[in-house]
Image (cartoon, rainbow, N blue to C red; front, side, top):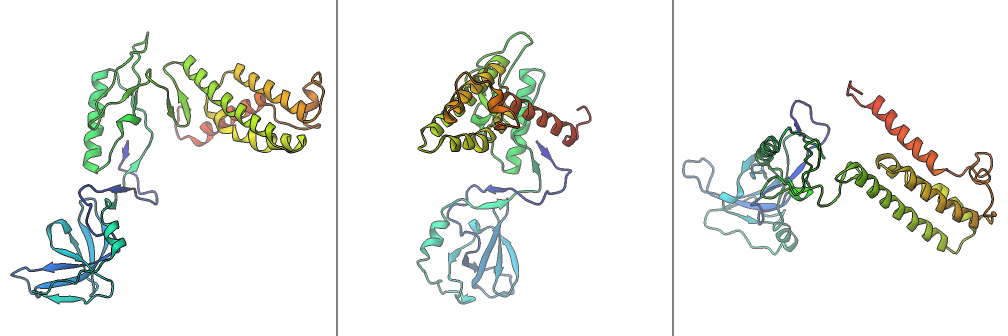
Length: 318
């Protein structure tokens, strides 16, 4: 999605320029041959510095006298030079061939250029009323990206078709010499959230992800050769805060939260030498150990997300 009516937000994207491998890199020094018949400037080789490349592959060069010129180095004769080389070599003299190993190696990579000041929103969601309308919209995006020199990775794009009753499997769309993949073939991530073909699949994937993450972390903490109270401190100060993002964006069922809490409670009691029959109040009361209770942490994370959407979003419908 391109928003061309907004001012530049303090940065410009850098894009790779095709067909620039072998050209001198930015900030390098070269000789450029000048042999125009009707020019007042004498024929010969002029020393200059390559300042930057533009999206049209032309280079902005600065001569020793301070003058600037935009030049397509693919259409002129040029040669690498040292920074302290002579400012001018008359016609008939060939520029000296210096090794300049690092400069020549850097010339083999594609050059970068600052793109036009368009704001880019990524990732984006495109909604259409039919598969044909969706393909037409993607073709329009494809043309605009090509005009701007931007590339889209179709393997990162996911299609989802729902006719009101069921999800259509194996339906893909063409995009920049490739095809998107259907969400039924594999889950995908969108804004940090794992998404499946339906709500139940999404919840199962989210639950599996956070359970594996926490179980692995709890096992690592339990293996440490340190005192039990230090393990509890690591759980409270590092492990639970590290789950905040997952608890905020993922659709985790309550059963998974209960399973995680049961596992954590069992280990905490063992680390603190608390009897297994002890109540949860002895562990999670604010005036006792003040350990975070996962179900409460989950609710607080969802509330913070809701509050941020209400007060930060500029959408009047929220």
